[in-house]
Length: 308
Ligand code: PPE
Image 1: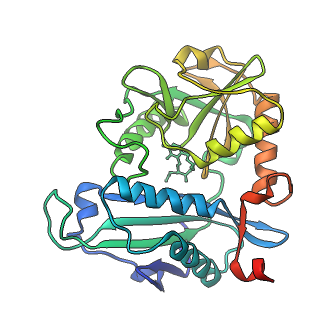
Image 2: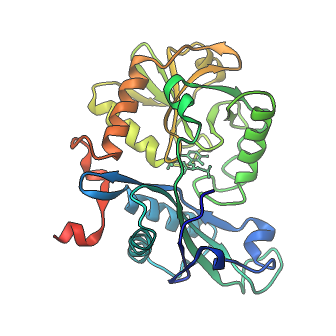
Image 3: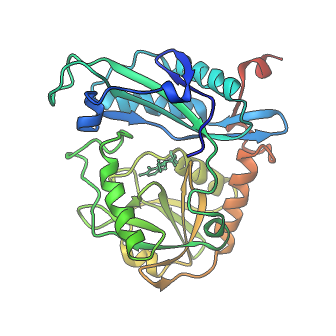
């Protein structure tokens, strides 16, 4: 991770090295935190944050699902983001808002612990590598399943649940693959360790529906909208692993991964990035970088710029 100058922490901009917590924080012991991943892009009109409002709204929803009261509103968190971007002066970066139960009463119950909130920002390049973005990655179906909706509220982007993702990607990488694809407990496709999965077959774009133990992905929503606007039928439905093996195209998407093609799953060759994947990838990258106006409503600019 490339260190930057400041981190926003509990209402203040502090030096990178000073954004620390005590080993007794609840969030460290029990994974009781919620977080976001957001990207800011360098555009002709200055730095733009892609769908910042939706990301902060999802953070608030994630917190609610853990019965965590955020001490800041969505608007305050958006303002904090702009303060941080201004302080660090990076034209383009990844942003990581996080809220967690802090230091107070150790014990599984979260009562009696303050809620701490921080936002980090640092440069983060292609999540699955430049080569993966261009030529596609090799993925493996994981032996680890996604947890069901009554085990954990998967709609919450909670820190502790990422143990599941950590084990899955660790297994895939040790076996020589770049990413893992997790199935639900019923055996349907859920998602990647940090991405939503899309399948293209006979011109139809399909992705698992939101009940498949997945995060309601903001990039997922973006890609569905772009694909529909480009004239592709899009279906949200249960998918099984053989749908991946027999697909014309498979890709994954997420804030960090953007649109990354998948060239094989479990050594079943899908092939180099196909035309639909490339069209959606180009449309997505043109949108986030402000090169295309068509979906420009998703780019949020620093408040002073909007007022100017
Ligand atoms: N599923 C999972 C499990 C997931 O973690 C992400 C985001 C997505 C889908 C896509 O969601 P969205 O970004 O709203 O389209 N994963 C974050 C990276 C996690 C990491 O720290 O690594 C991200 O893309 O920021």
